[in-house]
Length: 209
View (tube, helix red, strand yellow):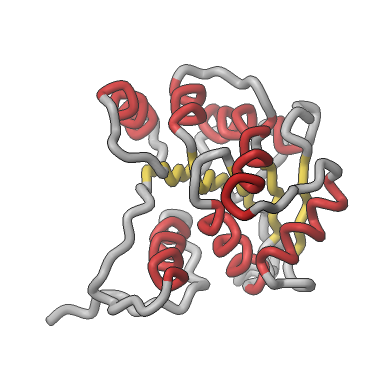
């Protein structure tokens, strides 16, 4: 994908944690690839276990196999550019601030990941990539999927919001008259990508009375 001035669009980092609701990540990837975006994807170690628990699906560990896996889940065999990274590969390009990006979306985002980012801990590639977005002043969007929220969760989210992180809880709307689970999910994904000024999802937006 190219910008209006013809320059190649920088990649967007997509982080997937072990929070419940991997359908949010799948739908996000689907629309971004269909819109021809370049995506660098990293899933946390816990995400492997959640795939097994929620969908009885085993996510392959090798990056080249993961690309095929994620494209299959998203239903987009071609289009866009997708690069996958091992969760522990802290030497990957996305671990460096010199690697320019559009920013990063973590969807869904566990409270463990929220806590580590809020306190500057980088125990894996996903957390390091998020830390890089913060230190470089780039866009970082988190989609927490947890309920109820403890005071510790709220304080960590507040710390990140004060640092400029956009917090988009996985809370769907109803005014667009959703008919399927995908309708509910896609609304959250659209509002998430709105934070990056990316409009590639056909949802019914509020038009007033």
